[in-house]
Image (spheres, protein in one colour):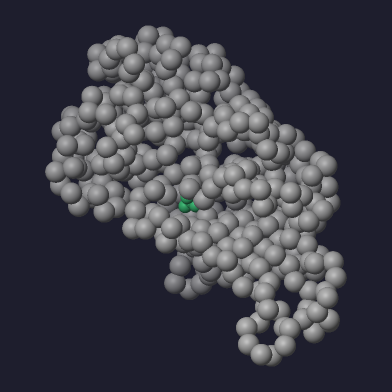
Length: 480
Ligand code: BG6
């Protein structure tokens, strides 16, 4: 279904994110017939560039990142016709008149500005939009992470934006919320009778959230070294996953109803004891550089891996551990949320059959899908022996060959901006609450001067991460 026609300005329109994600996502929505013909995409950046040079840059980006649609040269050329370019100076006067001339004032036309730039430019750009008369009450702005570095900086970013825009105009991206499986998490929880009655401390033993990556930080070292896994992944992506897993059912699938519930989860998180946090840093495996080489900081104490155990102090989840783990240069790219149910209270089949537990695993990537582990009788005449078998659903099988196209988070999220739907975007208070939880943990290890534990590239992270969960009589699923 096509969205309303739009003028979308991408600040940072020549940058890495625009080339890798934003423009290819728009292109694929164009190919899917969702982008109306009279829509404009306006790249904006500091450097002078002609419109045709910009189109060349985007053509190259699509060839590299546009997946299979980009092989259709006609489609690429038709898409490029929608593109414009303006050189603007975020801090000065340059380019704003030209930008204004390109934007149209038409009834029903959506105007949105995508701030694909560092957070230090959020405030100045918001101010320019207002002062140059480019934004009105209907205009939307999209901001990328990192949304601040800590609570204080996130607060001041929120304040800066609030001087020029209302909260319902601000779309804070966490691209994990646009992932197909992440949305499915809500569908599974609140679209079925089966799970919700069991979704609590009485039946759930613990929950694991793993986001494992094989990539290192090469190329992004200067950003990452000031950030680390806690700020880069936990404060936002893992926190959002935790919220969706743990929140109460919202009354409606509506932006504020969902975000109110997520906020309650974050606010109910207990502080984490230092001995429940394991930080790691990858070393070189001979062929690939170590973290410190990637970050060009030979004494860096920044973590490229983190595992922690936390609790949500509310009626539903009291005393149920949530184990979170994420890291770079691990043995596999594998992201999963696993709800591990308690063992059956008593085995009627005798001790030989063992005690069994169900596990619902939601795979974010790769091979998006869900598996429910159930216990059945081992087939055959061997008596009543029990085995665990997977009830397996893979999106690729369920959706057919288009599955790959359906799963790109940015496509969904950008279209939601045009539709004016904020459900999958973070509200200002959510971001602040997440920082309020992570700040003391970070301050704690900085104050103590803790160094992250080295771990081998291509491994499952430091041994202490396994110990963190093993000492509770549990073990990590998936990558080891
Ligand atoms: C980004 C982080 O937000 O998410 C990166 O800054 C990380 O460090 C990336 O690699 C992971 O995203 P995805 O979609 O590849 O899991």
